Length: 180
Ligand code: PRP
Image (cartoon, rainbow, N blue to C red; front, side, top):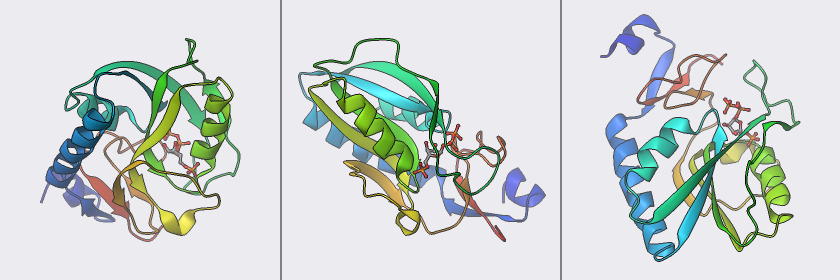
């Protein structure tokens, strides 16, 4: 049992480090195959996706560029506010680019659907979505997830980039919070 499970008994392991590593290898293989010969522009949604992005790109065998955007839908609570606000937007043109959005979690789907609409209005060649996790029980709007790591149950999850009041992002595994 590791330090976080000892010190925070309400955190229960959901996805191990090994499972995440294996899944990322598999996703990277598919992405590398699908974008062979192209220069892929990865757009990572901060903050939650930073760890997934860092591990995913080291497994890719295609040329990539990276852009970061930051949006916020939650504030400091465990429930989505239903509104998506832009904190940081793109710094370069994306017209005629092949784009892959990188997310840590698709919950209600509002963030990804808002982003897809905004990005499509800049006329990229293609845009797809890659998310480490998806919580289908919470979906409010249908969104395509072209590359998905794990479906997760309707529990509040933390770790591997995902926070609770900004903490737990550094955990190498994914946990759920009991009694939330
Ligand atoms: C989380 C997550 C997604 C979004 C998903 O971000 O990283 O971007 O919520 O929720 P949705 O499908 O209901 O829109 P959050 O706003 O918590 O910011 P963070 O990544 O900085 O923690």
